[in-house]
Image (cartoon, rainbow, N blue to C red; front, side, top):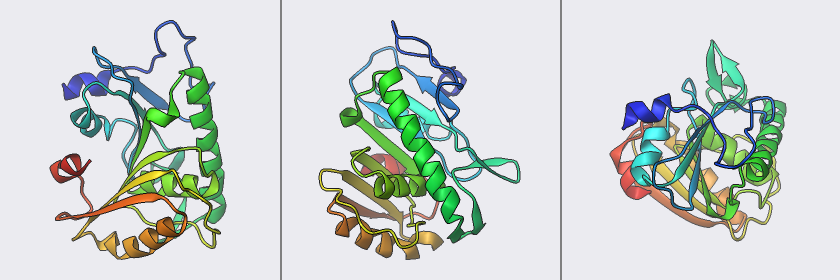
Length: 216
């Protein structure tokens, strides 16, 4: 149930040392269902939300997956983001790079500390969170292999495309999303990197909902 998901505290896998917020660079929430499969979803929220935003959506996609909701460290008027911006479409390039590097360290720490199999982990990002995942793929190629991007755009300037062959990407764009105009460039850049890219246009705006769950 949704209320149970949102109330779940962070905890470690059974038999493993507990990891605290001091051990990993991002505040996060760990959820285990009663019956587990071997898949993990790492969830990156949109602007102004927090680590709980995508828990319910991910639980509907796979009720037996382990969920890790993560909170961005940047702050805009008191609400979390993943990196600083100067306007809705211009971004602090230094901050994007430094936060992508910090998140790469989080992924490696969670992999080792929680014994997460990254080959069976899906990274799900919405809006600002999805944009951070794009930067992470481009700056740290090969670290994450299964990526779901909802309402995403390219936020890095002048990044030579790495070889991302073997990386599976699902890109979900809203047909009525004002940010959807940036999707074609993102598709081109991801295609240049050699990703196994599936792009789906949904009859939606910038919001997320049931059509996303069906597409996933």
